[in-house]
Amino acid sequence: MTCLGMSCLGDDLSWDELSWDELSRNQEIDHVIGKEQLPELSDREKMPYMEATILETLRYMSMIPTILHKTTCDTNIAGCDLPKNTQVWMNLYGMHHDKRYFKHNPDSFDPSRFLDSDGHLVPHEERKAVLAFGAGRRVCMGEVLAKTRVFLLFTQLLQNFYFEQADPENPVLFDMRKFIAGPDTLIAPKFKIVAKPR
Ligand code: HEM
Image (cartoon, rainbow, N blue to C red; front, side, top):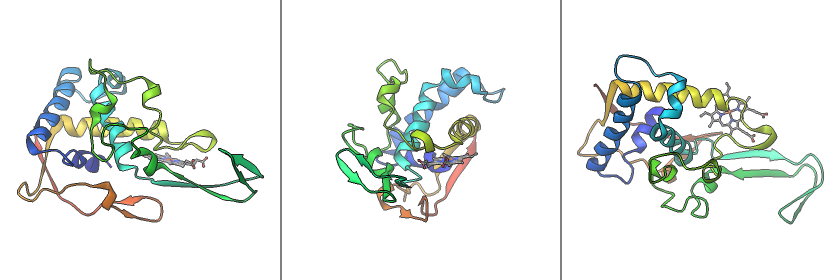
């Protein structure tokens, strides 16, 4: 997921923009953590750009595109009568790529959609449509663990490496609309990236 998140940066962006993008994130890492010590969870709140990038990766990728549930009794959702034992599919991918919730080109990868003009994370109200972990009673039990691990791994990799396309002449462009649906998750095509020590 982390590699894919980094590679997503190439989607809809030119290499110049990509380099700038990379640079600004590494600057945040250099500024908050430096090069000598490893990232800690207490760094997270001081790194809005990284947080926005992780949120955007979860939104853009929508690795688990749909969730299947079943009604346990006769019920009514948004005016629709649903008898007991009806399958209910939640379309997370559809929601994450819907202009009503993500106004600025939802099919492009753009962490800045979660940042205000001062570079702070937008309020929770404006991020709540990112439901990569589901919602309600059956929300993912590993959400906190997953988010903290992704933060530590992603930050540590970017602290120590520059990531580049293996073949800049023929860059791999990630368009989630072309991913293949596996049994539960979207499957990325195979790709190569180059990691250069910083
Ligand atoms: C980026 C990583 C992850 C994503 C995007 C993710 C996403 C999800 C989603 C969408 C669901 C279904 C929610 C629903 O049915 O409404 C789910 C359920 C679940 N996840 Fe995760 N998950 C992630 C990582 C993890 C990890 C690391 C763990 C455990 C350590 C975990 C444990 C679970 C469990 C136990 C459930 C079932 C919860 C229930 O049915 O009550 N997940 N996850």
